[in-house]
Length: 152
Image (cartoon, rainbow, N blue to C red; front, side, top):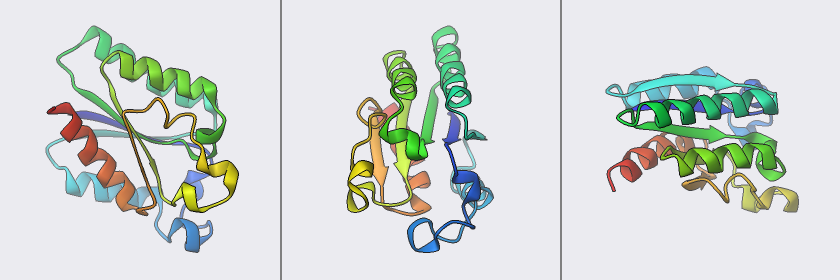
């Protein structure tokens, strides 16, 4: 399978952010772990602090799936704070899912155990599945979830 791993705002600062919440790993560590855990799959890694750029990445995967249905595209996305209020990213995810792209939202921390505003994810509501609170393992669990959902 071909995967897009998408990270939203401030996730480029992993390793510098509050280690009690986000751990001490970096996005490079996440990419290395994913590639080592799933050597038979193809990954492209993206990070943007820009809502529009994230939408562009999701839409490109959607277009690929629409034009080349034999390509089983999967997206693992950590939208960061956009999860809580970006209806534009939610719309892009909903379109992707409707076009057969499996989208799994992940969060490093348990968004339900933090500030009240973080407990609602408008993007997670339209994703194929949501995983949160497993630290860096949230990403590998997200990839596994896409693979499993692709086989059902």
